[in-house]
Length: 594
Image (cartoon, rainbow, N blue to C red; front, top):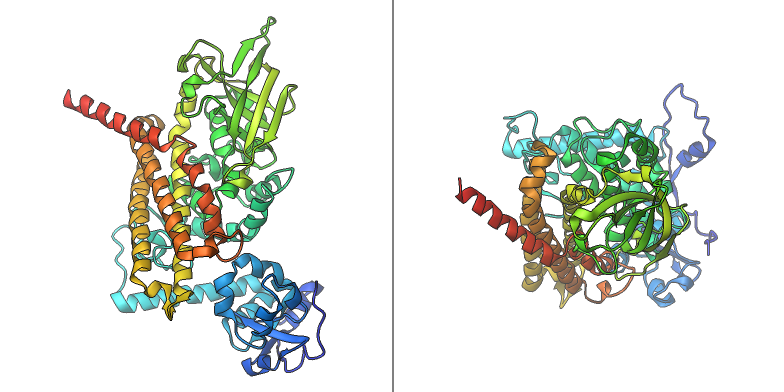
C-alpha cells in the first residue's frame, strides 16, 4: 500500500534551494517541481519518529517513512517496529538486495540526512543541469584520484600512448571484484576507447538490465515479445551491434560503434552485461543472435543478408541457432533432422526436432542444421527457417537454470523452406558451424568468468558485514581461504582469456580458428570449473541466505543453478578437455616433423 503522510512527516525539515542559471527559464514544470527543494533531517530529528503510526528509518543516508509498511513487511511487524527512528543501514544490507530498494524507494522516501552523500547526490540530480553537474562531480573526483596517485607514486610513465598506464579506479572497488585494469593496474591490451566504452556499457546495463533481472528470472523472461523492446533501445544507443563481434557491422546498421572496435570492446560488452548476475538474462539478450546470426553474415546470400541481418541487429527481429537434438548434442555430426528437396526443386522439406534452443520461443528466424546428404559431417547443411512457415511449432522448456533465456523445444513437420534460404552451399554446413565455434565458446568464457567474479564479489561484501561469534565473517581464516582460492582461480583464467583475446585481435579468422581452437576449448573448461567452485564457496559463505530465492543472496542462489548451463552447452567439459588435448598432440606431431 502507498503510505499516506503522517501529521509529523514534514516537521523539522530543512529546505535546500537548488540554484538556476541566470537567464535560463525552465519550462519543464515537472523538473522545476523536483528541483524546488530537497528535504533533509538531522539524526536527532529522525529518532523522534519511533512511535506507533509514525516510524522512520535511515538507510544509506536516506530517510524512509515505514509507518504504513510495517504490517506488510515479510519478516513481520516487530522486526521493523523495534528499529524505528534508527539507522538500519547495516542490518538492511544483511538481508536485502538492491531490488528491494528499487521497488519501495519511490513510495517510502521522505528525505535525506543532512550533509550525507545521499543528500548531495540528490541535490545534484535535482538541478536543471543534472547531467552536467554529475559530469563535473565525476571529473573533479577523477582529478582528485589522479593527484592522490601521483603524490604517492610520482607521475605515471607513458611508454606507449596507445595503452593504459595507471587509469583511475572504476566500479565498486571490491579487490578483485573487477578485472585488474579496472583497479589502477596497467594493461597492454586496453586503450582510452575501451575505457569510454566500458563506462557506457556499465551505465546502460545498470539502468536497463540489472534492475529487471529478478523479475525476468521469476517470469521466465520479459514477456511474450521477448527482449525486443530492450534490444531496440540497445541498438538506438549504439551498443547492440557489438554482439556479433569485430569488425563493427557498419554495412547493416546506421549507428556508429566505438573507434577501432575490436575483440576487447566485445569482451567488455559481454562482461558488463554479465555483471547483472544472471545467465538466463545474458542469454536472453545474447544467446541466440551471437551464434545464430554469424552464419548468415559470413555465408548467406546477399539477398538473405539484406532481408535478415539489419532487423536482427536493430532488435526488431530475434534469431537463434538450432543444432542440438534430443539424440545429438556435442556429437553434431550425428544430427537427424532431414531436409529433402521437393519434386519441383524449389523447396526443402524439413522434418525433425531441436532441443534446448536458446531464444527459440521468441525467435522470428531459426538457423537450422539439417541433413541434406549422407551420414556424418559431410552431409550437413544450414537453412534459415522462419517462424511463420507452416509446420513450425515451439514449446517452452523449464530447466534447472538460465530461466529467462527462453529455452525451447522445436518441431519441424513437413516445413517447406525455399531453396533461397539455404545458407552457403549444400552439404557444407559442418564447416559453417565449426567456423563460429571458437567465437561462441570465447563468449561463453567471458560470461562464465564474470559470473565467477560476481559470486566472489557478493561473498566478499557479505563476509565483510555479516558477524558470527562476535566478529565479521571475513575475520575468520577459513572464510579468507575460500575468498583467496576464488581469487586465484578467477585471475589466472582472466589472464588466459585476455591473452587469447589479443590473439583474436591480431590474427585473421582462418589463422585463429586453426591455432586457438584447442586453447579456447581448454579455457572453457577451466572457466566453467572456476565458476562452479566460486558458486559453491560463495553459497557456503552466505549460508542459508544463498539457499533462498530473493534477498541478499539472490545472485549467488541463481548463479548456482546456472552452472550446468555453462559446463555443458557449447561443448561439455569432457568433450572440451579431450578436444584440447588432441589438438596439443596434433601440434606436437606436426612440429616434430619440422
